[in-house]
Image 1 (cartoon, one colour):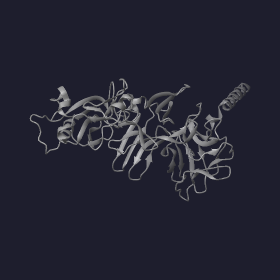
Image 2 (cartoon, one colour; image 1 turned 30 degrees about the horizontal axis):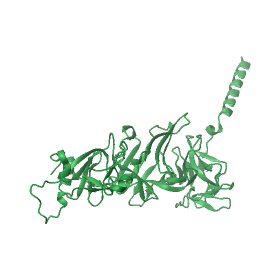
Image 3 (cartoon, one colour; image 1 turned 120 degrees about the horizontal axis):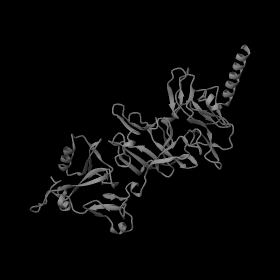
Image 4 (cartoon, helix red, strand yellow; image 1 turned 180 degrees about the horizontal axis):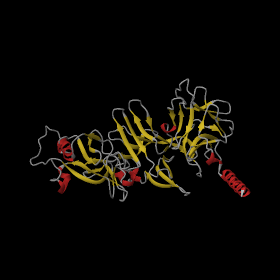
Length: 452
């Protein structure tokens, strides 16, 4: 009986040993930190505790003359890079001795083969701190005070071209901080490119794709806390993915990107080197990144394609036309398909006529015409009124008011003579109602419904 028990125990022991050595090393021991005594060298990586993200050295392709330190989704091919440390100062591809380590001053620092500093977190680290760098489960690389546990620096607060769940975009008017996405120069060059994605300082804010950080290329329309009003294909399913939070006391306006798959899929929200904003997902077990949403997705999405007082409808040919009551500024350019010069008002508004000029007998007052299913124009002003009726009344009583809208989740928006109505689209569904001020002669049968 005793020999049988010994044989049974021996068999169990051998099975346990076999199972132990059959487990991949990455699952049994994943290193996620960098310390003063443990740097990251060529050929090494750091892996987040959930085995989802990986930090290490990489080259964009086999022909690249440069290499970088970055974070990518682990186990996905081709490499899905979500953050790059030294995108403005690459290492030579031939440099095999570069290291990422904790410097004597406590900062995380990238050194080349000659021990020159290529990149650093550049923060103030307490002198008595034993700082450590950690790659977290959400892909956030943090420099942490070893004593207090405070995060002294975070990669998610220094975004590149990708917006990860848990990260933030926006700004702080009190500190001057701004969090924007900046595209790669090309698909094989992580250096900062020509396109950026940012949240505007308007009230309510909008999201913009900008060329060289200045020129609008695409505009979302005002944000109603959870979706872009100017993008009707962002249906209810998107409302849990994006959240806009404004804190007027702190001076912050932040947009958060939520993980609606609860960690079961790889997610990317990024600005491409061609200026296209994309939301992509890669399901577990799939080899394909699926594009769920992208902007601009048509010619009408390009900012101001139809010029001032023009409106774009991708379902019509040509795609541009003038707003009701307006006509092309240049019929010659319009006929060539160059619509950027826009349109001019055909009939002067009664309220804008010289008050010293006597009005003809029976001349009727201006009114408003309703345009449904629109992407609201840029350059709006927010008006704090109680409801839609008060919004309309304010605009009726102010000759400088060119148009108004009362958008659900936002409130009253008005457009004044200080700026033209620009970047308007007509949709086949969704969108908002825009009420445009016109001379009475342009109103037609709608005169009695929307006149003062």
